[in-house]
Amino acid sequence: MKNPVTIEIEKIVYGGLGLGRAGGKVVFIPFTAPGDRISAAILKEKKNYLEAEIQTVEKPSPKRISPFCPVFGLCGGCHLQHLSYDDQISVKEEQLRSSLHRLLAKRHFEILPTLQAPHDRGYRIRAQLKASLAGGRTIVGFHGIKSHRVVEIDRCPLLHPLANKILQELYSRIERWKGKIQLRNADILVSPEEEKGVIRLAGEGTCGSEILQEMVQESSCLKGAQFQGKNRTTWGDTNLQFRLPSERSREPVKVQIAADSFFQVNPFQNANLIRKIEEWAGLTGRENVLDLFCGAGNLTLPLARKAAKVWGVDVDPTAISAAEENARQNFLKNCSFRAATAHAGISRILKETNQVDLVVLDPPRAGAAEALEPIARLRPSKILYVSCEPPTLARDLARLGGLGYQVTRLQPLDMFPHTYHLEAIAECYRGHIFNCQ
Image (tube, rainbow, N blue to C red):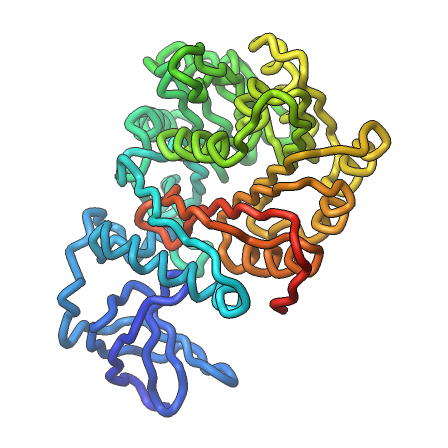
């Protein structure tokens, strides 16, 4: 097929890609809007579809707006800045329904309106930055779309102001390290509650503790720093304190997170996630609860305040150690944590009890396929499945259907504005077996 080709964009599909047609094939083009007419260059031709990139927008869609970031379209971090926030939500809801179409065809369940983010910028408390040499100098930024080329930034509109400040401080120091350190990665995590952050660096060369000490002491917002080369060097405190929401009559749950442990990057929406999980859990104080992929206790600890017993299982031993300490600091004596895979953790719990009333799981993007049959053996009356990947959520809900669990309602939650990602909570009850595969 000769380049260029003119394509009308019909809709945005999962991954933030515009869908059009050319030469009888579907074409996927990033950074397009429904209703755009574009001139596109075909990059790859597959058996059933084409991949292309915009050359020019011949006729812009009425939905197209100007992105607010100067590197949008180059950086691979954002996908939907060319749409208004309301239009982004509509696109994500359509993609969610598309992912769930087989389930929806078999069963009727409620998909609630998306819980929109209270802040669509300045919300990310973690930045996982890359570094490389360009023109004889070290640049820091994010990978470009479908590339390992680093797109340089000195700030990101989605990052919390504290994280941007630490990034700018990092830039001011890089030249001093020339000949000593060649940076590869920089991971920044900040706590709005503490108004402090930590930075974890990785690269080649020698980094003594005096370099990190100077970096922290000269910073107005760094609490600790770490460098991973041939050896790991740490200076200061690389743990951060956060507060999780609670009922008005009670003190917030306080948690400590290690810089290398998972924690939700959007604290504002994390609070909404916890509130919705507590609401749908409907605990009365008599229930046994299992929290799979529990991390440092983000969902476990708030649930423990209303449950008889809570187990938390996660494969990361550092996160489990933090969860145990967080339970002690919050005087929660009804928590038991296991550093294990979901399958192994459930096997241990089955030896302790024959009754779990509620299972909560928040797996990584790959989903929880291997944990579903073990969960069913626990016979919980209710499952709350938190997902950041609608296609794997649809796959796992279909499998749960075959195991006797019906989806009753689903709550989308926009954890990541300006990206194609969408969080969702699915509520499932044990009932009649149905098959939607």
